Length: 390
Image: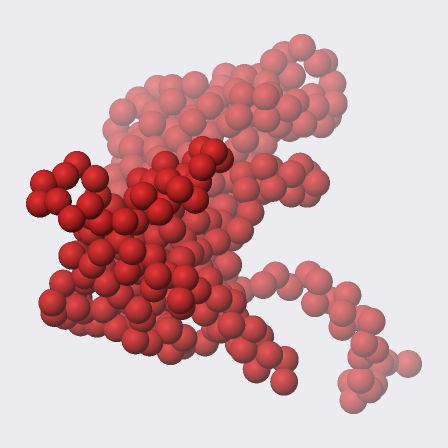
């Protein structure tokens, strides 16, 4: 009895069938065309130059596994399996293994069965794993089987032309080849390093060791992808929040000539750890922190700390003295500031990894309009997560 086409397929069968359908490649049309044109250019160069260069009567001048190499070189130039060393050494050592198996193993079926795994073992050992190498090893066995010599010259010329075409085309179209992993690109308005991950290199190595499978992506590229994913998660959690949305407005500030005692009193009165130092038009010229006071008052020594601090804060009343009298003499001049419209997510690495506790916020004319602290950031994260879970 034929199956009823109107009868729904059981859910477990659909689930089983879907497992054979791969996920879509997340690339745009431009990248698809770049890969297609590159494969055409690469194969064209290989075909024409090899035909002209390799003139050995009765010997092939083009090897079929190089077609698979072209797919890797031009479609996935960042893959470790597609790098020049993998293309040249992977195909070369695989051909050697295939020829050796064909000559030393009397049974052709056994030779074909051994050539591919032995070629894989040697490629893994030499760090030149290249999938077309398996086909190259098998081709060498088959050539010997029909009584033909393996075309070593064709292999050398095919590989060199393919790699040269890959270097030329990929570099021209904006893809590094040989591939060199790059740090995540910074936004146009950013000046800080966003590449500080929430995981360490040891964490990533431990995860890769636990996964224990060959990945078609380099370790450095994987780390960069994880960093991009982390920043995307931050942006999703924090939404479109900018520094101006969460900063503390009207921050307490001092000027270059503010006395040390007055600045110290402001820090303790407002229970803050830093005072931006501004000029007469509210532009940042420095920042003074508790650490600045401690360093200049030599409070790193435990004995008589109170007396040394009082002596440091007390003005001498002299016109000329080597002792610091005003904020401008002890402030930190190199100050990291951010724009009020800068996305809040850009500041997460600064607070979490670079050790910042407070960052002045400026407007379009570089005037102080607020200050961001770790407390402000934690409060914003708490509100964003709460709103997301509501």
